[in-house]
Length: 213
Ligand SMILES: C[S@@+](CC[C@H](N)C(=O)[O-])C[C@H]1O[C@@H](n2cnc3c(N)ncnc32)[C@H](O)[C@@H]1O
Image 1 (tube, protein in one colour):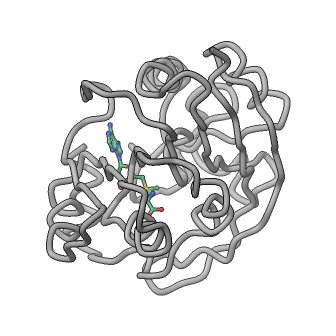
Image 2: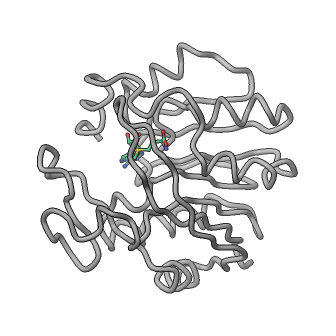
């Protein structure tokens, strides 16, 4: 999406160069996988960190921002494949063992999230792992800014296009089930998120789910 691209053009490494808390929590669970798809991978801070720790895993890092993908291209790692594509359109011939995302699905509207969950289901092998982080209704930004649809706000006045959907645990379990995933583990955590030089305390859900067939 070009609006996201403009942020990377302006800010470069806007989330810093350290891996997310979600990637650190997911790492011990991905050792058995041979192939991982990371959606909304940005400039690959998580993909690179995971690939270096899990040398037998190949990580396809998909993001729609050409600038972020070019940043990742400039840091070649043998087992990371950068892909610049829109997650709504991208089709891969072979199913992945696991799919990972950090703070990706919650930036979309309800109907879009449903479509992306359906695409994740198609992208995964039977019983594939689906590991993601989602902002929680306990986050301090909940209710801030323009009310877009239930639970979803345009929180940042300078970016009216940047939506955040805030999840409860119940809604997450339901949304996974509806798309053919069973939640195996859900936990709430707080991350001191680096965003453009400031630290934002972000309350989120770490969810480990599995495709049910
Ligand atoms: C909140 S950022 C998270 C980036 C990365 N996961 C991280 O933690 O560093 C959301 C990412 O989703 C990407 N994105 C937004 N819409 C997309 C789409 N339709 N298809 C693929 N990527 C998209 C943006 O370019 C951005 O990199």
